[in-house]
Image (cartoon, rainbow, N blue to C red):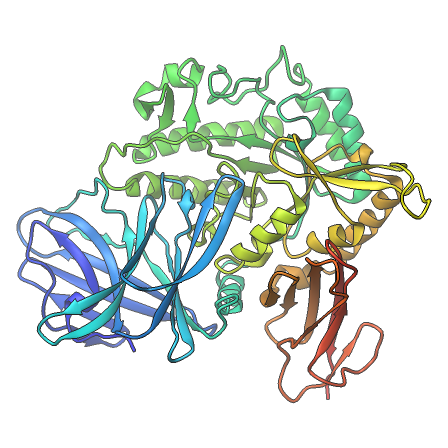
Length: 612
């Protein structure tokens, strides 16, 4: 039960003015609070999915500028036996979550201006006595913080639980002029029963409605093939293989403008390197791609530039310097127009149809002292203006892996590079944890596999093929992957291929081609799917994908234990409706048994609702 008796139960706003203490006014769709010098308005936007969006606005109604020291939305509840869930997220180890008792306070914040660096902007609170929880997302553009805490009220001798989230207080000093409105970071929140996935299907349904997925493409990316080493003849081999697999996009990753991209003059100017890389043949390669039915794409780290780049030398006032490099000052409208014009020109020059936006080196100090709020408002204007000018462009979000993989970015990007960790097993775990706070269908699944047709004679005297995956971000380790695991783990979001496609064994290549063809035929389902976690333990993981009406239900089971040969689950099905499986057999009970074949195995089953 949310407490709304006093303004201090709803707002954690401080500054060079009297704090918000006093009675709230209940409005038709929220609350308001009025002080002598300012007014705060809260608007709640309910959605049929069960997700609510909260928007708080601070309005300077006085005659002098008011400076904010903290601008956080607060939720206050009666004290109870509570648990709190947070996620840490680091390079190659994104979305690692855990529950813990709310004993005193639990706080999280991003380590730099990438939304997920250090922690994810998500927190869940669970009332153990009621068996129900509430999930929270802060949609802060810039540095953010989120906290759950117990608070003791001396006057009443009662304990309360509070959740505060919004812009980080680190070096936050934002001056609001008389008559100006300052929007706090919006908050998404919703109740849940399941501690496994926080009823994430509600969030997926919300995103499918407000931010519909345009496509479920198959992408080829050069990064995990040869990293920044690009060779025209070698790439034509990959082109032929990508075409055979039915890829939609062929993306040149870092290196197309030259090596040493933090210091190279091409970093920031974004013109093709003519002496190295493809030696001026990128346009020729793109022509071959189009002839093969593939769409060309490139990698940009658009927010940075080398100080020796031509574009920085001509426009130094549009950048600021830190860490020996230049950063675009997106807080400046002139800088936004400059970078929009530059990117648009490169799109037209090369015929680019897909961009992977990356961000690896970031500034630490916001020149505006606003937790990078103004910076990101400018960056958001840039992305949306680019989308308006290039509506067919596929825009991919990457930032040192998945360090910008957050709800605040879902509306502006088509898909998300989930991690630089290209272990298929690790990616499945990252995916499972991230779908708790992101729409499952926007998370890219990357296949970085190769193999050999003849490995060595095994115990049974067979000389079977071996399929292996990169086990990290650098190809310095590998792991064995089974075909059934590969073909199941790739499902759920856009599929990416980044390896030497000619090194995939012929038999596996044929099965992968067939699986991708099936996935494309079923793309309408996957574009609007919701995901639930049915089981997640030491021995098995089971995911359920379905449409909102539960008319088609797809179950994926992954074995983690050598000796568990089956896993039994109770899928979420529509009440009073009968189901059949893909063989036509009627489901005789709610229990579904999925076969497993030991550690690293996978199995699938599809259920269809029968219409009366």
